[in-house]
Length: 264
Ligand code: MG
View (cartoon, rainbow, N blue to C red):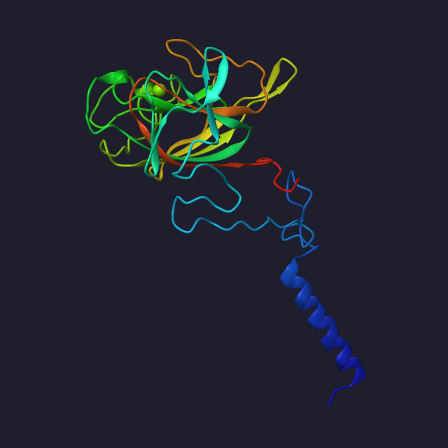
């Protein structure tokens, strides 16, 4: 037997239960945010399909090298922009020593970057003269690539160092000939006119191991000098030709909008 009053109560209970599943408006406002705890009106993140296997590009990544060609890259030759000359082999490409740096055709700001690289199996040279290359975020901030496998150099110049500023927390490099992975979260510096209003920050996983946790950069990465910040906007990614036949494969990047305010 159900009375009209009982039916009303049941309906109200159902509505309350349904609403509770989607959030609450009678909860406190989160400090520094416009939202209630469990706010039902808070926008949801959009869906991204992850890569089919670990390290593969997710659905919203820009693939900069898929194993086939260097169409996303260019080089500079005596001030002129030319097609990339680095050598593409099966599934990877290699620094063509002496041809100059490889520069992405697109420009990037805040981003997440995945890069894989391997060192020459013919081991030669020492310190900075062994398997040296580099991943330059915005063409200015070098994440060092070097054969640091049982190979000493100054700490802030070994593989995965933010060159000249921060050594990696640990050294998880693989031996020459094996593939290493860099996964980098980059917060680009922000400028208002000539003024720096936010420095660059780097969070960095090397072969899946954290080596930098939101490290602040003191400016561009320099040899035997302090970095400086000069105002710039989005800039290309750059891979360094340091004269050594380092190999790269599986490079992808995700432009990330609004690390600080994901809902905007
Ligand atoms: Mg280098």
